[in-house]
Image (cartoon, rainbow, N blue to C red; front, side, top):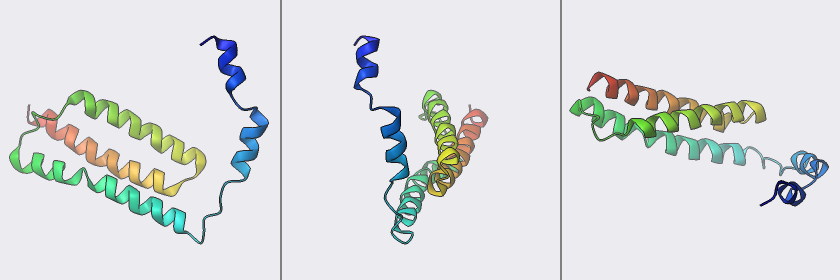
Amino acid sequence: MPQAALYSSLPPLDTLRAWRQHRPMDNGGFTTALGLVAGTLTTLSFLPQLVKAWKSRSTHDISSGMLALFSAGLVLWIVYGVIVADLPVIAANAVTLVFVGLITALKLRYR
């Protein structure tokens, strides 16, 4: 796709600013609660892997590349959450980053 065509297909900057100002209301905290529950569930999904790696002292089947890419993505999600001031995004990704960091440390320890 030519560069000019790409830019012409994007909405005008004023439209993006207007959309950002008219986001749906939080419905009494429901949206934040939903985000916190979703973040908690996805964060806790790393806990069984962490416990298994700790107990078995084996991380051979865990990809170092996946851990590195996933960690980079988590850092970017945290930065995004700070920029948009979204507590569920910040909290869930920060805790997940700690879990992934622990799994990475176990992987380095049990080589």
